[in-house]
Image 1 (tube, rainbow, N blue to C red):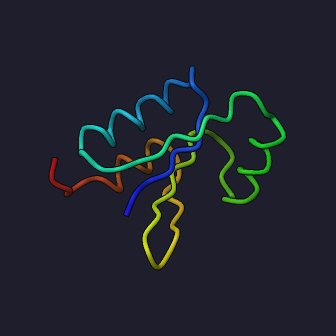
Image 2 (image 1 turned 180 degrees about the vertical axis):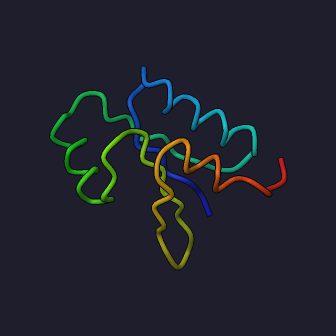
Length: 81
């Protein structure tokens, strides 16, 4: 299991999402979308999420859209740090 964070490098919420995942010591991949507005638009449509970051949980059997930073915070409640 790992998370994918689609984000923009100078986006505060994107940085907070990465820091949160680091704090929980879980694996994640950051996909930098800085240089392609077309790609950002495509990702927003694909995951039905209007803002960045877009956090996705990937496991062997499914892919689950968590949402943005606030949704990630809620998702992580109760997990061990």
